[in-house]
Length: 473
Image (cartoon, rainbow, N blue to C red; front, side):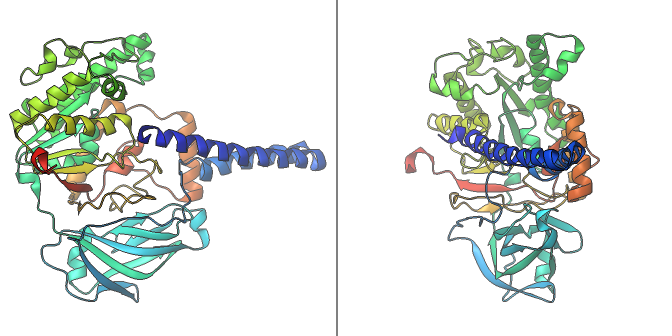
């Protein structure tokens, strides 16, 4: 079942790590018995440091695996050569190409298993990969089109080697930001993480947040609240986030909708469409508690029941009301979060009941099955294609750029999100300090949450899926 794939990978990862650690402990016990207990204590300390530096990542595949991508026949392709540290095309780059990736084979070198290997692109772009990376990878060169149309692009590996064949894969997707957009966010912050730059420049964007985001509210219990009270407060705050923060990107509250369903309950709702699924933590079971600021009434306002049938009816009503040219929604094959998967499934069911049909979807991934750190490397870098050990549908790609000012605005939008303000634990702070020294990792000053590093980049990345509508299915 696709929903449980990440949990299965995590369980396997933990089993393997436990086996490795238990084996190391047995060795330390033997050292302690033969050389003395202090040597064993020192070895235990070094083992813990090594774990925090190199074994704490959730990487659920062999880093020397090829990324496997299929691209549509409409993609532009051309060979390139790397000579004296510069990448040059063997032909001309068409003027209409606005999204460009380079397929390249990388092999590990030297410190590439201890420090994060990367490809240095141009003068200041660092596109990083897994430690020990080897195999086929895809660099995002969309920010470097002028150099490629000129005298070539500087390209060199850091802790890895670049090997051919070098193939460029380009796309000429039209900028849909001037057409009506609807962005579906399973939770407050998903729209900002995936598409803040897109909706900031959009002519007419509508943001629809499906859930209150009330779970994992332990930090609010420090205010003297019970677990249920903390969850209610967090749900209210994140619902407010979903309506207020988009104004920072130019989208007024009159174009924002909070549907008020409950976190991690969408799969259960889909399994029993007429059965209400209340909050796991707050105990609430009435979605109207956070919908009073919506611009208009929706079908779910009639009884306030958190059911799949109400969710699908709400989305259908919004599609008919807003008539979007493009819907932005989580990638159903790539993003494993259950609420994300079922957000897109609810959209599919809603579109089966609407006269209005969007022309396309833009698909995004804020999470991955296999790698919790993607995109790797520092904030402000380009976004290479994520690991794909099984080929995805051959969708075109669109990777619109964000200026330095837009990146700053996006970081500030994330700083306003209550769910991204939770202080780091002492354990995570210590782990980051170790990784800074031993692996060379960096985190931005804009915020402590990992998403400030992962989401604030030179581009946003979308898979473009043409919507055929009911008549062509």
